[in-house]
Image 1: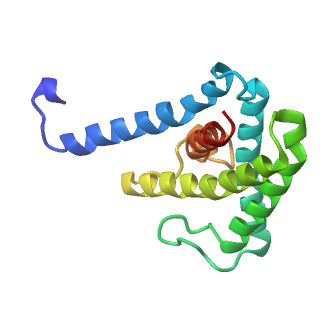
Image 2 (image 1 turned 90 degrees about the horizontal axis):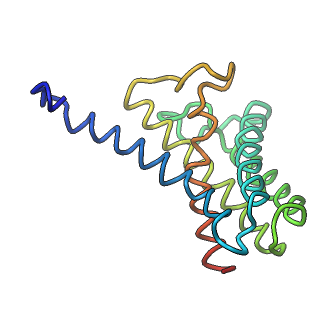
Length: 174
């Protein structure tokens, strides 16, 4: 824009680009730290975070469809319900407790807190990206995955859960 002399809307354009880059690069790069930091859990820990984040999204969707009546943030994400959120917290925390001995070098309290972090902040990440899409006038961020929107719709939660689980792990376990 600057090179062609167009300054109208520059801040919104550059801000959107920078916000998107920070969200993707900063958020997702934390997964690589599990490989780089000795004792962090390696590739299995990445699988733990990614699988739980995705299953959290799916369980929130299924519980919301089956039992959801009360909306949480209807102006931002009209399909998000309290039943979906609480169902996701329950399922994700339970799965974390089941999967941790197979995929992590940590103890059950870690699994409990990791499940809570992934379910709560996965929801927050999803809602934040929904707010961004609403502001930009985008319904879905693509059609790469029929019924699930685009790739961003699948990883929006992960951009929040990956750094939080890594920093939780590094603070309490390294």
